[in-house]
Image (cartoon, rainbow, N blue to C red):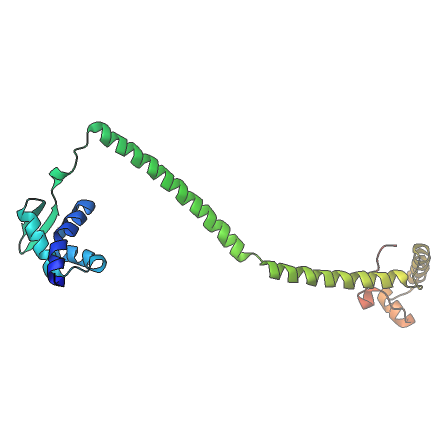
Length: 198
């Protein structure tokens, strides 16, 4: 059997199954376009099959101007009772509720994903921790050096010195800072040093 004959023989069954499965109206061009890729049917075979099925009463044909529309014979489908229709309505409501719930979950996940995308990655976090460890080690070292220094002034000595300076400054016509400059005293503030508490 040649390819054309095989195509013509197979086309009516394929077209009928397709129209019954989709259960909606199509033009010959639509049916050809939808079946050509999966079944390799030529346009002539599709048109011939549609005409043949319509003549046999297996499908319905309606003419709109120059175009013919084909659809499955509705008598071939079971008629649904009111109970069946109510069951389908209930199922639609249930599925709609599930869809809304899933959509809400998706929105939450999208927000979570956005937050995770904007946060540091594990390698970036590790790098940040290493930097902080280095800074911490540097500050610890500086603190140890300050604590180990032998030229610390005790609070008692500092208080005595302050009292002495205050007594001198009572009779001094200029400011405390000017006095320190003239005498040659350098303060911690001059060097931006803040000593730790003892």
